[in-house]
Image (tube, rainbow, N blue to C red; front, side, top):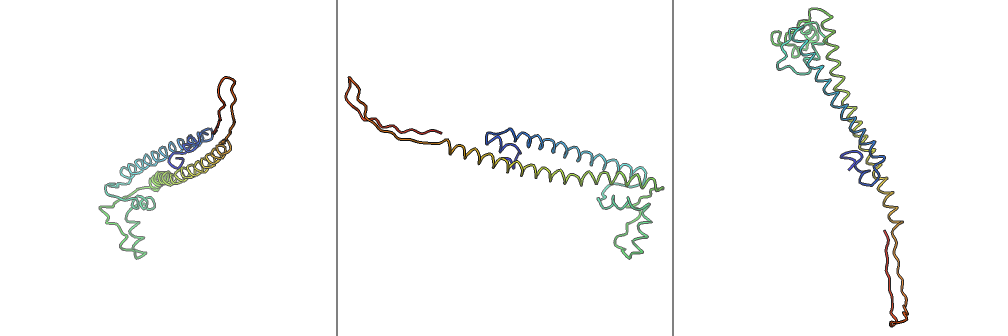
Length: 184
């Protein structure tokens, strides 16, 4: 159960005192994940808007690589010149379709800052997912420990017994009494 929702294995074992912390941590991690993802999307909207308004970029049909490349070059001609010098002619962009021109280095730096901020938010999501996995694993280990302890106590508390005897009541005939008892 703890692998599905941290803390539920502890609840199953009857010892939710430690499990509640795993559940709270899971909730906090989900809030963090949603917040970081929303921030990354917000920054992505900002950098694409900035590129359209300050760089003359037509954002339709552009992939993530394009948005990364335009953060490093002032305009498409500068990029294509470098690719031509490197003899990477297949990497060159068709100027009208992939046009951009930041006009100033400050515009390019501002765009780059927005782009990096978005990318960092998306990259940090991996750490949040890793923390969720660790939280689940720690909760599962704790739940297994608690269930094993609970089962061990049950074995110690379980007992059975057998007794036999003869009853000699005064006004009735004698009888044989056999008792079998268990406790859990």
